[in-house]
Image (cartoon, rainbow over the protein chains, first blue to last red):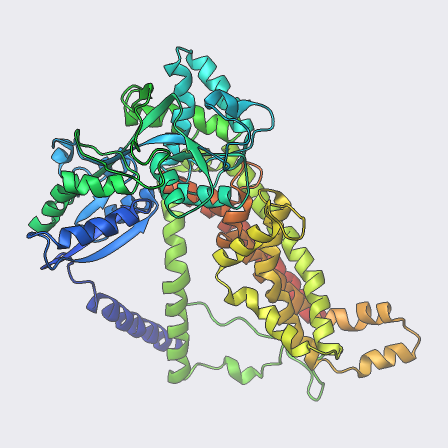
Length: 336
Length: 290
């Protein structure tokens, strides 16, 4: 009898809580002029400027935003798990293609910019005045050079850095074996692998390491904030391409925003924050913080692209597979 | 639903419970529950289920959902094994250090009078209040390359240990302190007057009484250290030799390997359950022994 009573009480309270939980289930977002932006955290200053500029256009008037920033892979999973999103931006294409076709249309990359909204290149940042006289990738594996580079395991963007280090050997005519040899020596000099590019920058600025593998936009942004570092664009590096898209349920206003971001006006805003434009002929103007503010984005002698390495799915399998990936094995010290 | 476990062995009438033993429960407590306490039990079970059991079950089901072969492959990679090993060893070390130092701090706070005692009382709890990422930031600045005290533990195992010690400091202090406070000093005085030295008095008279509390505190510290992320993530530098399990799990999540992350978490859970059960056993053994 007491057991029955207890069971009854349990059931009753269970029902009460369930009712309370389901009763206040979320109402649908993206109604009216409110848009949800879900993005990786690096371009936050750029998006804040873009949102402001968009509000000054005819289509963008009165737009209010719910913006969420975080690590690229985590943000992609959040959207996949149902987080409301009208506009999504990631650091890597695979984070976007994971959402195709359920949340994003398969034609997301068919536009004139191929779905990209910003570009950058991997650069080598040094202490002010470059005291070790670092001139390129080869200098990084000299004995005693301490490298800081974000962890490709916890930061998707960090894959760009490692691929740049690896592919510079190929760009110079070296073999895969020589590239792996280089990467081993490279990781032997790594003294810190922070969780993200931003963490890596602050770790470096706090005094760890002699060089920081970074992105042109990140180095420019740091210098715009008055932080003490120099950077050099190596003769061989990789082109970073950041995709963005609207979701299937996005209203017209979100599509207008994407078009604005990809327009010359939007690209100028990205350029002012240190990103290379995705459109030809955009006048980047003067970019504070760049090595040469009047010519902020020098052309790279041997610029590799992700396609040169076989595209993202091939690259992820070959280099970043959780057990057999070349980079995974070398970075975890299980190879060598 | 299972019946309530017996709380304490029946005691002879008129005999006082020994110090440190659990309160003696009269047999009438085990009679059928009234409506009010039935509801209380129901709510407690429901609360625990929603907050603890359902999420944990979801983690485990995600981990085993991909099949035993996948589970094994996920937790047997070199990186996973290294991270789990470091986490378990660090958590065990931190619990032991806390058991000793936490007891010492509690002892000083209860038995000694000194200026600024109130301030120390507040200081003890600060690691609870500080966001762990802030703790990590402070420790990284303190033990980083620009260390004002000349100790560079950035991206080393000592750095990881210090971070864990910092966030687990309050547990043993706060569990032992009230027991020490309620301890009457007559038995110690008697032991001393019978010729026992201070160490012998502590080991024979005080320690048995506070062992259950030390075990509780150590268990809390162990659990916390096993899952700690915020205070460790900045100071560890995420090198293969300094990476703890929660960092490895975060990497798996960020790389989209959710079943692998869940599998590693399940191993951590299983180890925690074993250790917590062992400490719980120690606690009730010590409590029975008195």
